[in-house]
Amino acid sequence: MKRILEHGLSEFLIGLLFGFGLILSGMTDPGKVVGFLDLFGTWDPSLAFVMGGAIAVGVLAFGMARKRTTNFLGGAMRLPTSNDINARLVVGSLLFGAGWGLAGFCPGPALVSLGAGQDKAVVFVIAMVLGMLAFEVLERRKAKAQAVGAA
Image (tube, rainbow, N blue to C red; front, top):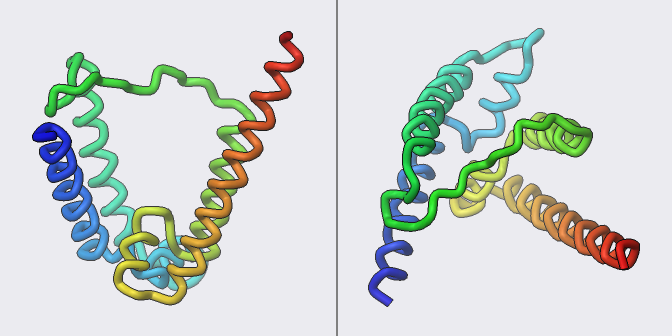
């Protein structure tokens, strides 16, 4: 039980730090995101610096993680192993980018904005959850069809 509480507390604090970072960087403001994507209008490059900082932290963190067998809390280290670029990855990336451009949100900032009471975030989060549910249903059907085909 103590371990669960420790994990829950650390996850809560990391999520809180992430949320504050999103608020401070302006990522929860859809107008800022749309301004960044408006290359031929009133382009706002400030989000590029936020992304650059996130990428730098990610590169360092993954570099450290690859040298470890356990995470900082003692759990197993599970890193992605595939480098394949396939149709699912490309289509998923295009859908993610289109949603980001249309709504001005990606999942993390949308959840923070939902917590802050932004109406636009409510619509986005509902659509996001419905998309996740649709994906799960399709994946289960696909797995079931493959199991029947293999039998």
